View 1: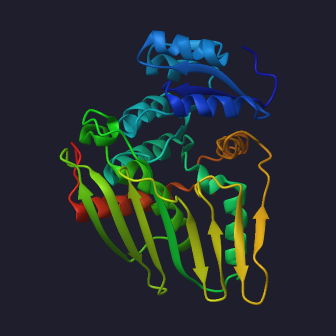
View 2 (view 1 turned 30 degrees about the vertical axis):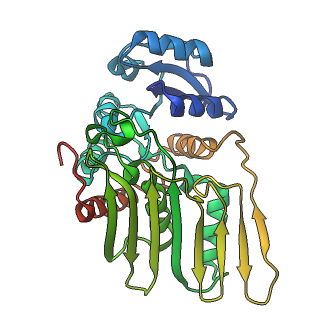
View 3 (view 1 turned 120 degrees about the horizontal axis):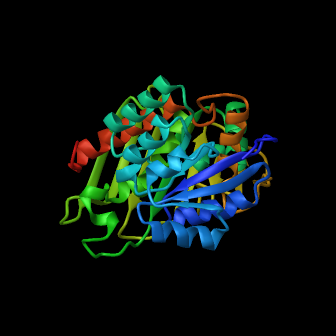
Length: 332
């Protein structure tokens, strides 16, 4: 294939629901092309390729990583396989957008980040919230003092998951539990607004398999701010977020991790709904894919919107929470 333009050509590693959603959003994104899909199952790769109009289907991760025409690979495996999958791509010199959480623990995350930095290859966690234009606007208002000094952050994410012990959300070998699958969103949101905490407290109810079913987290900051966070695979929560300051607050609605609007409350003013259209359209994956492509075109190996040091800080907090509630995964 002769490269005559600045189109960024993507590969997708894995063929599950998230990979399919990403493929649909990428199809609507100018300047990007989904060229290949890879899976450990040739049949699954071929089926995915047929469903999404992908020209090339590979029956192994290594074959996908070896495709000379693929610029970047989106890793959409379960998080227990993130390190192995991303390493195959990074070693082959492919840029990587890796689903959240980056890995099972901080040690693995450091290994992945270290590999990317040694190889000089782009790596970004797919924390789409950080790239969302509504969230970016929220941060601008907070930084500009619209709500005064931030004193508290709240965020929750809860669903009712299958109770079958073999389900990935209940399997310790797959990084099961509420925290890594859902709690990563509230924790990442708190980090985005307040940075790394100076204190971490947590409580959880564990399943018979030993993963967290419902978890509450309290983060403390030297500024005097606090973050109250929760996640659950046993109950459907409002899944909202709020940032409260000395002169107002910002409320993000259900689905705060990929919002289309928020409500700004300020002293002496009527509540104001703020909307920022997503130029990329789709269901929310477009902004993160667009940021990856911008970085690649500008020869950046890390994104300023989703910095790797920030990802490592979030993983450190997740590790601290698991330590406090007694959840361990194989390899910890």
